[in-house]
Each structure stands twice: as structure tokens, then as C-alpha cells.
Length: 105
Image 1 (cartoon, rainbow, N blue to C red):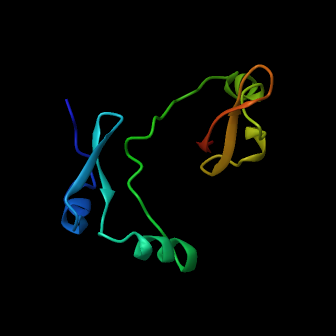
Image 2 (cartoon, one colour; image 1 turned 45 degrees about the horizontal axis):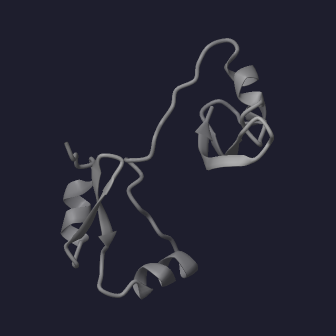
């Protein structure tokens, strides 16, 4: 079943092209306008925002959570104050990048 995100009413109103795609079980805008130059220049010159609701979220908790993550993350989660977030990459057993994303402490 395809779901909409909490931001669907807003993204739907801005979707001039009517183009949608399936992303992790959610309906997501493919492109807001016929030309992508406006989005391109917004990101280059000011800010770009998109709905990341379909991205996977994991909750890792407990007394050994930081130690567990030591072998998986390229950054040390202990340097991130509680309530803050940092960008990092997830690594495999050989140290190769599997994914990237934001982790919140």
C-alpha cells in the first residue's frame, strides 16, 4: 500500500508537473516544475528542502549503543552532544562505505 507523508498536502499543492514516484512505500514528488533549474539554483544560492519522511530510521539504544556504533560509523557518536545530530557514513567490516546519513544522539 502506498502511503502519503505528513507533508503531502503541501508538496501536492506545489507539484506543478503532477509527476509522482514510489519511494520506500510512500508517494513522493518526482519534479515540482517542468524545468529543474529553479530547484538547482535554490540549492546553489539559498536553500533546498525535500520531504525525507520515506528515509529509513533506526533506534539504537541501551548502555552499549555507542560502543555498538563504534564499529559501524565513520564518526565517533560520543563527540555529538545529546539532542544534536551529525552527518556520517555507515561502514562494512572492511571499512567500505555502505550508506550515508544523519545520526542523532
